[in-house]
Length: 415
Image (tube, rainbow, N blue to C red; front, side):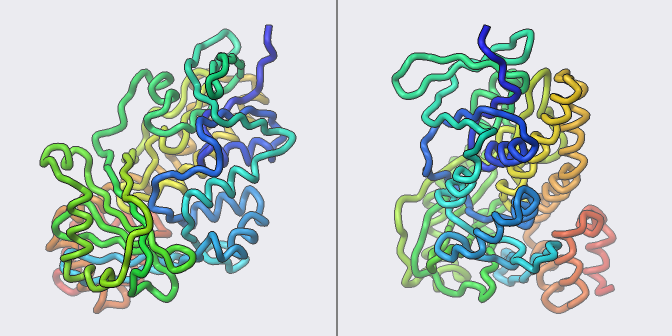
């Protein structure tokens, strides 16, 4: 009989790395199997919200000190700019809850951010195997047998009491553990390119979401990066893209060259590298994310915010909660479905479920350009409405106003 590990994590992106940080903090030995070799790129918008900063600060405040002292790889960000289809924009500052008065968020290329996280998980409790392709997951009386291969070498099988899936929406964990459950039809598809020389950035490095009429209900983004670079991209409903046979790359480049609210800022800009695409498994509320002897996190659990497209914060957050649930399961020697649902799935969606639902409501709002234009126009004239919209990103009760017709009626009637 081979020894059985307490925990095996498959995948070492933000969700897997986050789980590892908190498992190590709790003194729980674990093995991480990662199919790539770091440093490696990940196609993403490169925006890290206040939730990202919160989780990292809880893991170790020194991590944030290191991030905000590294100007070459991390750029502090203090808010988001929303531009309505008519081109009018509103700035929404992030509200920080940290007592150290650090910036509430930041941007960083995923090549850099993921490698930063990876460099922090090596330690006595964490064993990492890179270039590890998982070929099978098999239930055993004690948990799971995980078979993997490194490079062209022979297959190796390891055993664990609890498996944490953090290998993305197309990884083996979602396919196998959730019995082939496909990502929701709310999934989107995105393109990302890096540019140099984009002008007109906000002085406090606000990330920008432009809801251009020609790509609704999708959006175009510009995220400032260290060194004067920018992450530029487009996201759109995957079903719509397939149904209308939309060439996203052509739409993105057309917006850059012809949209009157965008083109001047790219007059002297140049791409630095290719434009890449990837799927965005959007979250819309509570779904199945656990079962007998396993937990699913990050993109594998479809936790990307459906309005902003940001997934790093929720990935880290789910990794943190998975580690906490793993500690309780190991202590109680309970790995059954109901126990893990209570201590992971229920907790996760109690914390972020309403947020995902409300973001989905906000996504549906932009399907009506006239209404989005109206809200932004009124917000530019009303300090009280601007403050309400700012509060929406920190207070779910305020954000819930978006579900009420009376909210829009008050805007229409200037009340």
